[in-house]
Image 1 (cartoon, rainbow over the protein chains, first blue to last red):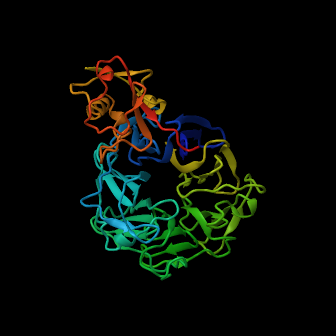
Image 2: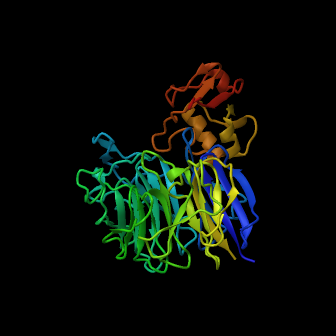
Image 3: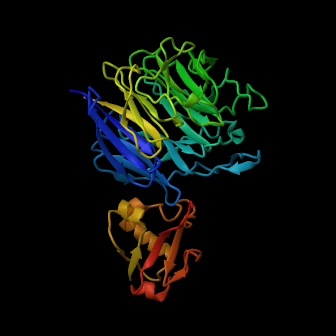
Amino acid sequence: MSGVRVLVGTRKGAFILTADGKRDKWQVDGPHFPGFELYHLKGSPVNPDRIWASQSSGWFGQLMQRSDDGGTTWEAVGNEFPYDGVPGTHQWYDGTPHPWEFKRVWHLEPSLTDANVVYAGVEDAALFRSSDGGASWHELSGLRQHGSGPHWAPGAGGMCLHTIIQDPTNAQRMYVAISAAGTFRTDDGGATWTAINKGLRSNYLPDEDAEVGHCVHHIAMHPSRPNTLFMQKHWDVMRSDNAGDQWHEISGNLPTDFGFVIDVHAHDPETLYVVPITSDAHHFVHEGKLRVYRSRTGGHEWEALTKGLPQEHCYVNVLRDAMSVDTLDECGVYFGTTGGQVYVSPDGGDTWQAIVRDLPAVLSVEVQTLP
Amino acid sequence: MTIRVVLPSPLRDLARVSGEVVLSVSAPVTQRRLIDALEAAYPMLRGTVRDPVTGRRRALVRFYACSEDHSNDEPDALLPESVAQGKEPYLVVGAIAGG
């Protein structure tokens, strides 16, 4: 019987949650790397037993870990992320030039075709690639050297490259998103990049329609429709049907369109999930109720999903990498909260149950569907 | 020279060791040579006590020996003789931070 393995990164270690296809009885393994921040873990689609983990600490810096046995044992791999050439400057909070400085790895994206290749999105924003199983990392510096680079500025969470999406039909095309610069696309394997932010409007910018400066929180794509992208921006839920060339808003009837996560149903590319957050001043769910909102129409029309989720006195957040879906026949949806809960819906969002309730604050959730 | 080093518990966990680690460091025994030897013996600790790009001590890591703070010594300064002779351990300490 097929099953799932959920990789959970938290403020104080990593946890691995496993279940069979029913997804009602769970084994909890961890913490791995206790005491360290695990910003992200993700398995290779080529070899699911190969899992990458970003481990960091304010004391001991960035470490990178790789498992080749599904997370049972781990091996430290290369942890040097040197910027290509003279790093130059970006814009600091006060508008002054500030040197690019590596701080941590936010997101790992294993190659769709080669288990030895993995991409890393880092703070200060840059994209790195390893082609030797993580032993060494090389910057795809065409992104940072995009002409707008000196104008990028950090958001409240830092200037991080947090989203990496590979086009499964075109090995030369990839998307990345940076807070607070915006979204970029390459059509030549990462050599050059185009800012794709038309249609985004951000009223915290002097020019609301600026080419860069938008605080994009997360992007999702269904692999069957690689030209359609969904975005949770700081405020606004957005959609593009032409590979990011133009965006339009699909927030519709959401109670608030601020949030971090967005994801797409595994089998229906028009079914979306978001978790509305009250505001950028109040980083907790709206009205004290933990509600996932689902649209079956590609946006605009949203329904609240509440069965099994707390509907009073709840003040957690759901961070940008903390939602994922499995690919079982009945799509499972997963998310983790800053309160340490990880929830699963084994029926596409209709009902929810907590897999665990008392982990450290959850930073990321990724699910692997196992044969 | 045989040098004794005490690591903080997170680094002992990473290195999968308990208690002191013992390193062989050729003379002259300096902070740089000691950390070179530490990282060679325990590759999983590379970059954890000093920044891999600048080579400087990480801000929240301290170096103590013989009841003295050697955190701000130059990387190529000689370590105390009793450390170089293996009589006293070299302490790598995670600084108290965070309240």
